[in-house]
View (cartoon, rainbow, N blue to C red):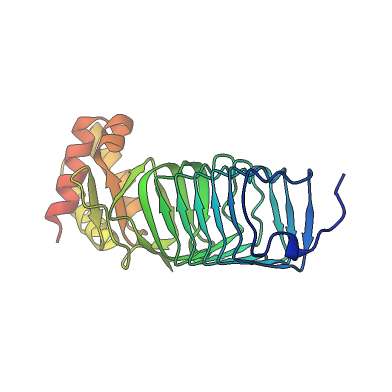
Length: 255
């Protein structure tokens, strides 16, 4: 059951600790400005074609919320916010900051993020649409994430400088303009495709072995990728130390 629509004036300009909304409160075509909510339970709210601007939410519950019809969130700050199982759909987040927010079981593939910062958030087992995330910064660990696009070589513009990529994959992405992680656990190859092709040509001149057959197979896949970030620990866990050393050595040597 969806509750009756309430007007934006109820939230616009509101500063409150402990606000509790009725379940599934429905906001349609509302402009919600400069509200500051702390320890709030929004009780599965529904935002349909709304604008939320210059709002601050701290230790608030957005779980199971729903965003429809290009709901826009502009210059909003979220700290310790529970976004679990939220349906962000075709919402747009512009210049928003997320600090220690929980996004588990929240789908990102249909929403847009521009100039946003994710700092120490729980982002696990998710997919980002590479065409819909631009000029964003990720800080902390992200786990089992895929950045993907239907269009080959989609330019990815993300700052991973202070990010740990734990089992992160890239599909149809061009990583030429990303900022790679600075720690030594990660290795970034901006020109992976060219390196992989050269390494593959070299291996074709070498005797066959079980490890070389595996390397050739992987290098063929990498030859279509415009850049990649390897997490060495992940690579060793999946493929073993011998393969990991060989593949990194081959790619490093093929300048």
